[in-house]
Length: 79
Image 1 (cartoon, rainbow, N blue to C red):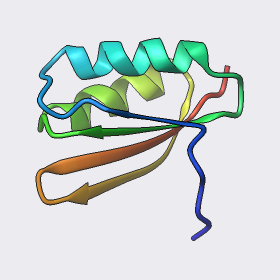
Image 2: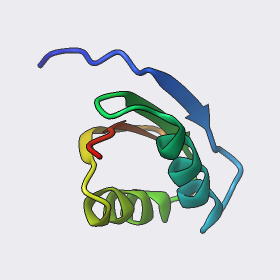
Image 3: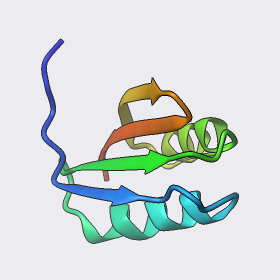
Image 4: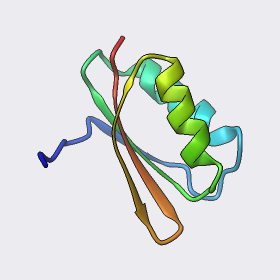
């Protein structure tokens, strides 16, 4: 598996639905096509919410890693 270096990282731990999705959306909008955003969240709902938002908006979920209560999303901006 190749390692993807994020262009930007955000930490939304301690925030709950819908805030992690709002923060993800705001940061993705600031990036250029092809850039990669890393999000670290601890809201269990984020796994479904952020994954669904990524798919609905045509971006690429490169990786989703679980480390204890933390979820780490790697998202590539597609458009």
